[in-house]
Each structure stands twice: as C-alpha cells, then as structure tokens.
Length: 198
Image (tube, rainbow, N blue to C red; front, side, top):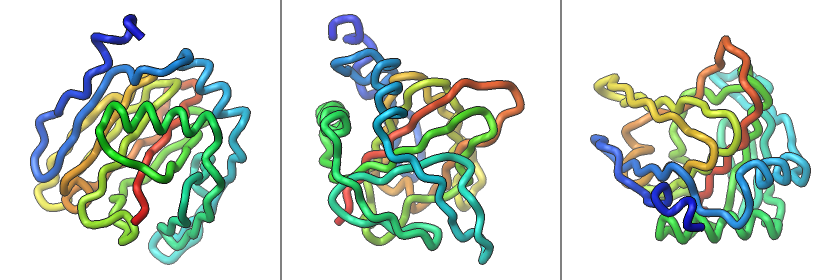
C-alpha cells in the first residue's frame, strides 16, 4: 500500500455546476493487471441492445450489472447479478476512498479502440437527484469527455490504469459524458461505475 500512498488521495478537479474528484491509483490488495484479468475472466459479459432516438443498436462494448436492484436506461432493463467476492472487495476500496456508499456496479469492457460510450447523463430517477458515481478504470487509458448541456464547455480527463474518478453534486444535471472511439490501436480496458440505487 505504501507504494501508492502519494497517488491514493482523491483530489478535486476545478469544475462548474457539479463536482469532480480524481485519484491516480486506488489502493488495491492486488496489482491492477491481476484485478483486470480476473474481472475479464469471471464476469458474465453481455452485448446489450439499447434504444437511441427510437432505434435499436448493439452497444459498442460488453457490460454486466451487479448489485441489489434492477437498473433501467436507454430502454434497457438490467436485472442484477449478485456482487462477487472480488466486486465486494473493490466496492469496499472505492467506498473507503470516496466516503460514499454504493450498492450496485455497472461493468463495461472496452475490447479495443473501436469500443466506446456515447454522450449521456446518468440521470435516471432511481439514482436520485444528485447521485455520486465512482468510476474505477483498469487497463488502457481512455479520455473521458464531459460536455456542459448549456454553455458547451468541455472538460477532458485521462482515465489511466488504476485511477478513480468521482462524479457528484449536480454533475449529471448539467453535464453529458462519454468516451469516443479511437483511430490508433489500443489494448483492452475495464471500467466499473459504482452507484447507489434508491
């Protein structure tokens, strides 16, 4: 743990109409590579179909939903799988770092540079009006893009291997976020977004 001490501080990012904080390395009991390899091997990944502007599309990534309750977004209802011992450990580490409580996690597996996440807000009613969402990234670094809904300001955060990003306050009310496809070759990335379903 001492190796990560300097990187294991959640620091605020200057940000209007919301709250962002970032930690370069979440303290974990295993290496980032071991955690990622286990998540890829142990997760029941699915390629879901979502509705965007009235049309059905396969998501350009694999995903899985674990936790205490179902979750609905983009016309898709996810029934929860139970938290595994590995996910319980990761949740504990995330809760210790953020001071927040989470009961569910959405896992996304970006297999290469062609997998992406469209611009959206996590503003579903079951998350509450000011949700805290903690995003743990493992593997290849990707740029997380936030765009303000009203003044079109853009904020970019490089989500590096082992990093933790916390979105809270009114971030989901005022901002969209997503991850673009890339043209240069990239290795795989696994991202876990911990949430509290109310």
